[in-house]
Length: 112
Length: 111
Image (cartoon, rainbow over all chains, first blue to last red; front, side):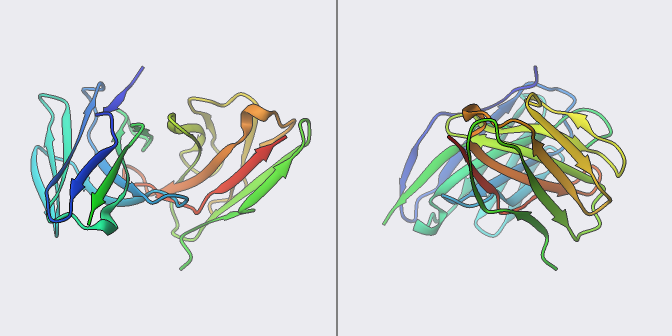
């Protein structure tokens, strides 16, 4: 059974701080990794994708991937109250299709 | 360009009733998916269609059927609704081996 684990929350950080969200996965053959943001009552929205080891930066967001450790993380710098949401880690399954396995998500609260 | 659309947005059913959830995408994506999301359970795949004319079971297919009507449309049918099917249902689509894009969701309550 392929699994994606996210550290339990909720996570609360003050405005301006760095929020660190972590995710581990069990399928060693996974090739694609995604972070989705989901506001309460809304659908998941893709915010980051990463395919190779290392860091990928997009504005205040940085995704980090370590395939040897089967670990992917999302850093949010200068956290804003508008970043308060549930963040879902998703990992592709090995093979030709594009099925994803999702973690259960972690809820981030940014305190003004 | 509407992306992924779903109808209806909300639905209340009685146990035993049937209904079909509709999903359409205008991004020319090959693959489409149906998920359900329950508190504490995350997103769970019900069925998916890797390409027009094919469908496959996901993690939680029991009690559901799907139809990939054409490249744009992928419907989910509940033949005899049960309270355990109360959930939020999301449709998603993707180009092969690329990220998935989600519709706005259908909130279903089965009494």
